Length: 340
Image 1 (cartoon, helix red, strand yellow):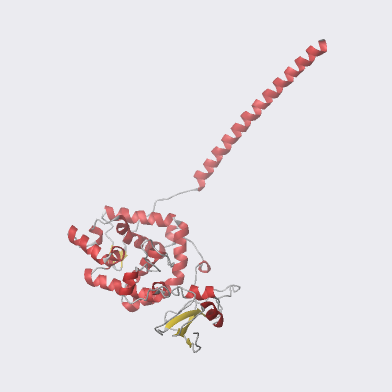
Image 2 (image 1 turned 45 degrees about the horizontal axis):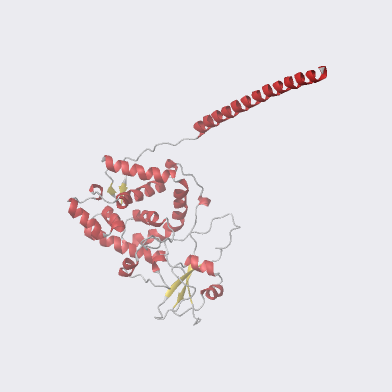
């Protein structure tokens, strides 16, 4: 009997001790987690910063001043600079692709008498990628099929020259020159690229103004020129907005040669192999070829661009040789074999 009572007392004491220890353990654990959270938050607040931007006081587009003294203009530019600065991955890709494609676009703009700033229009239109909009606008310059045909581009199931960077840039230049001839203003010409010439003219007449910055427009066109301005500002002053990269981080253009083709090609994969590349490389350099074949019933002469030797060599620590913009034409290879 005494042993039973003693056993019960001992068991009760042991349970009480364990309960006290357990309570202390959980209290300690809770305090520890709470302390860890506080330290983590302090560390986050110490290391992470989001800064407001210093807006430039003097900004132009195609030599035309941006009226930043206008509070509405200032705020709209601030918005696009913030969006592009803090969408770091997208803006960094803009820098990388621009290094590859601006050397192709810039000489064409110069030759056609179009201000150099319009290269940023192509950048914001497509990110310098062959994308297709919900409305069907395609290529770097996001040209609609009807507009493309109006400016001499071939668009069909086999060939779509909206994806030919050189020809699409030339077509865009003709459009922009036509718009400038109407407005006498490059900023309005840029706005019309998004809204259409008739759309811009209708709003100018309705609102009785003659400047883009005085127009009340739909949200897309209202932001459009400011997106171009933001792209220009970040590209020209990358470190000011926190973008740091090495030359070797940028994408580079590659020297190419041309194959003249005025016959049908039943199998473009076979054609590629005969020209010492594969089907993928052929399509990368000629995205305007939309099928795996080319019937070419009209016997039109096409120019196929192919990379010179060294395109596949990534073992070298040196950058691939950039295109020499002083000579846009390189030595050509006349294809004599009939592929019908």
